[in-house]
Image (cartoon, rainbow, N blue to C red; front, top):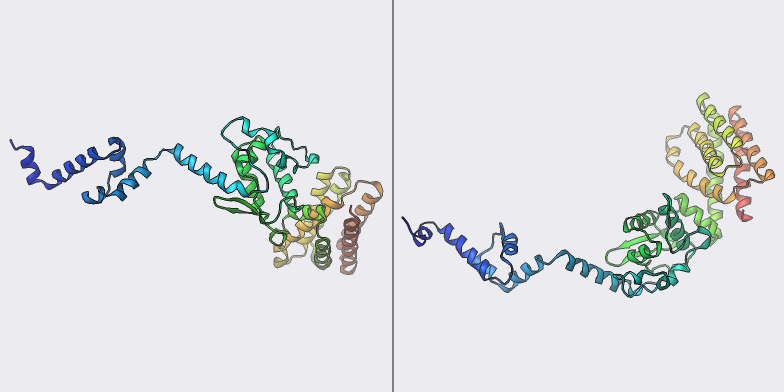
Length: 348
């Protein structure tokens, strides 16, 4: 029978394997961990003995807890420049108390019903989006600064990271924030905001920070809507008229119900846009819809006189389209836009 030495001489692979095993035994790390790290590695025995390789091995076998600690340290150092003082120790339960977040607490509007005890219900995410979005638009957070860290927002709202991350993604999609790796969410300036987003447009109008935006919105609506009404009067089909009439009837029926009236109003204007039968213009439907939504949210009045005037203007527009009178339809659309503009400028 051959000895082990003879086998190693005849079969160099066995010799290399034994040398590798001896190297693993000499290394200052647990054998089961080293075998897992070196498994399948194609490096020489001399390279494994080098200091650099040993450092890489030690880095690879660090536990998940150690890596998490590193990430938390990076987050803490990055949040030192935030416009609000973070709590000193987020790892303890007492560090997330509301008294340590008083600066952030004061920036939450009481009218939204947001309290440090947290939010409940299926609309919690939307409420946080509303609160943070409005305060960014109102200038509560300076352009170029960072929002509080995710952990601080979670502690204040008593909610999960998933909810806060969904909120931040939504605000980033609206271009109110820009995500920066290892630093947080950077507050963008007004020139970067997505003004074609219905929420952003509504918040900007409600904040009345820039009166020029109202005039710009009026100019765009005055340019587009009368032309759309004229084309609808020339091209509308029977089915289009049915959709307009149904939407108008819903507006009358739900004039005292804001959400239902709003949906009916949008359906009415969407039916007119569809009846124009312009494939290029239909692509701009999202623009008109955003403008109309923002105007509606800031001009809706359920007072008898204002509502009667609104319904009469929509009825006049529908009748002009139904009777295929482009001039009257264009005139009715101009009057409708002018009334909305007047209520916006009056601060309705």
